[in-house]
Image (cartoon, rainbow, N blue to C red):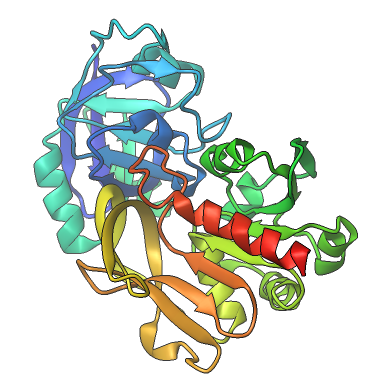
Length: 360
């Protein structure tokens, strides 16, 4: 493998070996602590315009399979690993990770001291980085990196431009696509839901015209404060008439639509090992997370909203429920892709809420 460099906007240079696409790339550098599920992570739209560092030392051992995509066209900007493996005999494998990244035009770099890099990211927070070819003078590469202004319009770039169906024979559910994970669609399909996916720019009237039994606000990338006010206005109108389940970025917008504030996390959460406490049941489970922002606990209007889940590591708000309407939200990923599966029963709760409402 040929040599490549990872450079950071603080002047740090890491030397490694190239795999995947040979393209030069720029993006925010974030780390993920998941031990498995690299395909789901790379294809998750929350990583739009970001370069993902994997803490797991060896990545790629079971290749790429057709059942583990979270989006058809991944939009992350790069992959950083300690070691890239290509030894799989998995019968589901269709491509190696190297082949997959080449097809998707996503650069990778291996041979990096990912422990040292992650320690730096934990100390400094998210930084801007670039994967480049080796040159005698890196000054120009740093000039380009420092000149890059990363977009804050991530949702508009990853949301579907047109409505489309995911047909079923059961309850009618509208999913508002803020950067949709396919795991959400899989969970709804397993429950025979008849799903219509709408763009993030949809109006409350467009949702009402479909006469759904429930609405899901999907996960997505970026900050909720960069999104238009029309989105929270839509949520405030829909939540009063239709059961609503909000996830990830959708959870943050649901909170904002009900008067709460959202702030950046000091340390972003990316991994599948976060202990979550369900306050209502007093149970602890582990969940997959991918968040850079959190709902400010002190800003929650307790006359309107009830906190249902908290992260036991940093006490951040992980779930909310409306006191007056059959609406609830979670910050973590309940769809179990890549896992764990412990919180997927929240989809059963959503089904029960819709069914109960229909029977009245």
